[in-house]
Length: 158
Image 1 (tube, rainbow, N blue to C red):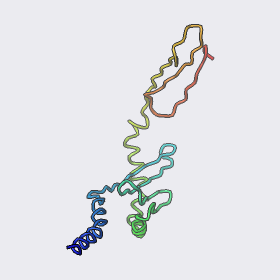
Image 2 (image 1 turned 30 degrees about the vertical axis):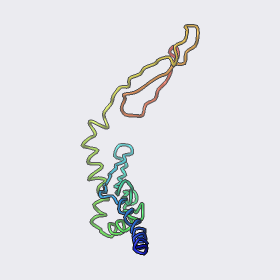
Image 3 (image 1 turned 120 degrees about the vertical axis):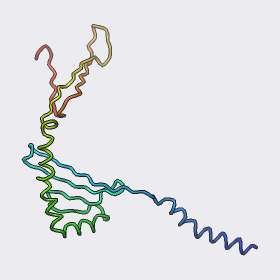
Image 4 (image 1 turned 120 degrees about the horizontal axis):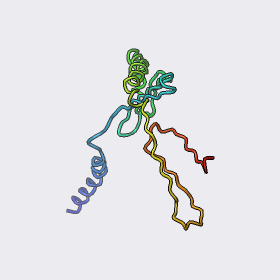
């Protein structure tokens, strides 16, 4: 009886790591692509990034500045090599700066690029002090678009 128990313990010890590993295997995975169009001075210069992700980690990307796919992680090496060997795929990505980025810029320009929203400005004291004391003023500017603004403070018009 003792030898059977020892054999059972050895078997359980041998099988335990694979069983534990099997619990860590995820039954679902997520693969997605993210396209980014970066515009400089309108559409004068455009850069397209087409980024590929597996479970949240980028593994390969196409960058129009390079004109080719490059692996970001070892997982993307074979994909980059294959896609770079396919002339039709490369040509399609290289022309996407015009057919995808510049095209979509033209479609959304009127309600995104030309959009202007006036800021909401609120000036208030940081703490309430008696009238004889100087107060630190806080200026809050929000609700505006586009995001780049310049805020200037004037005292008595100067």
